[in-house]
Length: 199
Image (cartoon, rainbow, N blue to C red; front, side, top):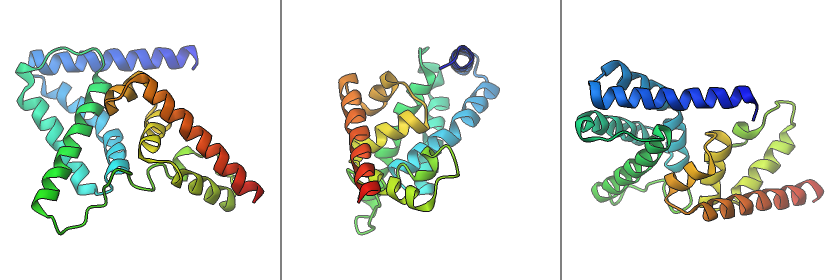
């Protein structure tokens, strides 16, 4: 990461803290709206990788921010707003899934221990568009062999750009587990890509 990237990341970090303080101390609607606009799309993308039901994910984001605004006077200052939002959203989304399952037991949910098989679709990780169709198919097949935790870690790391500490906090696992999932994900991808390319 370049010095410029570090500066941008630090500025974003401080901006989030400032917005959060304005929400909980000043009841600032502008700050609240700014946080919502900034994190709506990233949370939507993340949620759809866990539960591929767009309306449910949208409702969960709304629920999260409604709760934040409703309880703003009781909330404290936090050191990492991004991590807090991802963690809280993940909890909210899974809770909404449980509620939906209770209400509609016969309605099959596309949700299980293994998140959506398109969790990390090829498009999101390919930097160049020159890669041919066969290579993309091989990469997608490799991702299909990752288990749920490996896919989620890879998505948060490569797509959302979160740190290992943030990923551990969001998933509720120790940092050693994050490293372990990442190592296994990369090893599985490498092994399956090699088989696909040489097979």
